[in-house]
Image (cartoon, rainbow, N blue to C red; front, side):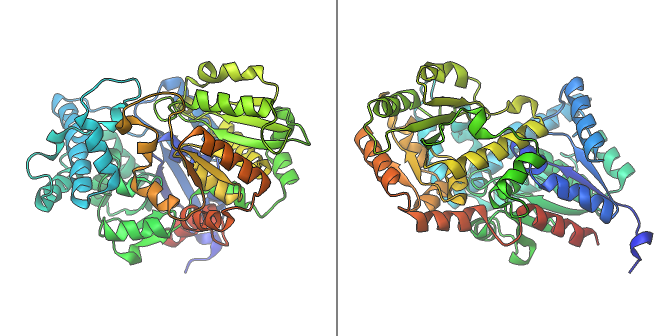
Length: 495
């Protein structure tokens, strides 16, 4: 083995995928870990774009400056637009038919609860402001023989083919950089199929990360034949084996860096705030020291149907002192993709005990802003007596801090088709598994909501054992942070 000083410079390309993965990678302690191993292990790190391609020139320059000035990582374009008519047509067909039909057929073959829900919604054939485009899965995507494993195999072959994956910029990246490792943040997206098909021609090692906890039972097949597959937790490991046929010796549980701030053991809360120069959340939101805190994680309007009326009900009860704790602060937190938050919830600014917490805008991802945001959320959840949310990852976040969780499963005072209702959104595989651990309360009307709020305010230990199960089975908590486990896998792969 070469001595430490004589090590050859290794190179890795990270293709993070969408803004959520970019946030988890580059707004978490993982970015410092990557910087550390780049120096210690002599690794040059390239980051290939974020979210989609192409991003605006000014935005590209801003991100390039951020990564290169602060972390010595080289920011490069994800891919170029196909220039020829054939290239554009092939890319269109790959994204808008091949990938979608592969997803539809994969979900149909495995008979997922999530897929059944999509099919029922598609049958409605109605237009509604609560009907979201991603809820529609036309039947033609499964024509003919939707449960044919042979047809699915052929489609995956086409997705993985170098013929449908040609892209001059990706090829030039791989040829010129000659990376020792390609790391994919999302192994179910069309762009990942492109990168893998071309990387295999150059015999590059490839590790792929499952983007989030619901994707293995919703987002179709994963890119086949990678060197390693990374998942958050034991449930995802089992799904990758059972449904996707990945050998267990290729699967590694690495957790998700987004949860690292909940398990930040290297420093206490004061040092965390001081080191990252975070304004104290208590002061920023003018929280009363002697008040209990309820954290309401709102959703986008098509998913958080009736939230306005539910929040109004809670506010009236707080104002009238109907809950056990007479002094309560209520924080309303926006979903990162919700651009209607200020308009929808500005009415609650009139209550002195309500604080609006707008998350950073994901359409222009700023790693530093999202780091501040992630730390503030972790500190506020530790301070909270109760979390209220719809079908959301926030149930896992809350379990990480052992904060009681109420899951909203009704539409407030809005009447809507059952297939589009908030209640129907719980008919998905990943959330059914979470609910089965009895760590949350799923409520379906106003009286039940009041009863559960009262119960948790007086008995915060209720369902604590279930929350512990959620933490262990979904956040994938181990003795080491996710950031450390990921960098260990990188070093192991390129050694």
